[in-house]
Length: 194
Picture 1 (tube, rainbow, N blue to C red):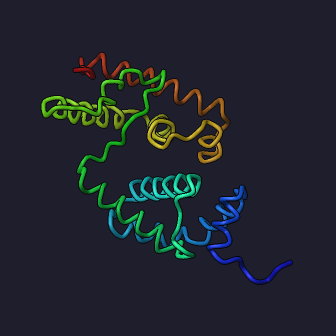
Picture 2 (spheres, rainbow, N blue to C red):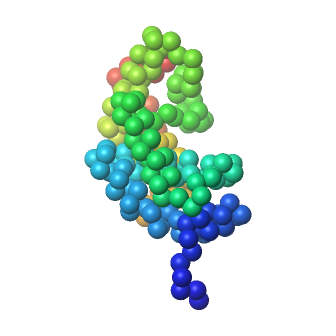
Picture 3 (cartoon, rainbow, N blue to C red):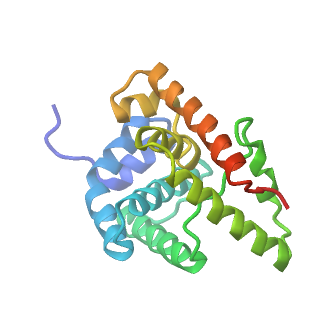
């Protein structure tokens, strides 16, 4: 058993060469420092977790594309990515993540138009606001599953592990969340298209 811990640069190289475990070690080694830094800026646990996840998605994508050349300075590089994501978060001033156009949320396809003019942008912001408000009306367990699935793009297996319920229970909660969202939308006559 090797006593000496592997340097970040070795772990990065091992991950690029296919060792998923190396990335787990890197995340485990630096998670507290990176998360604390993000939290100190945004002062919101959920936002900090989202930014932390986004930072590591960027890290993974950069490493997989072979664009990493920080010469062993892994932590400062990840901190810089995190810092930029925090700035983006405040620049947007809009806490709503963008939705992927899934079957369940085809209603949001209107949000994926990248060439939005000013009027469409206002409508888009209003839709985001309405959706945020509707989601807040859901029961806590349904809201939790919906946020994990739609906002954080987690699988039902991951949701099951995180919440400590069976996959079927997680699926059921998602189903009820969607049914309740539709009811709230209809009851309030909210229009989510432009």
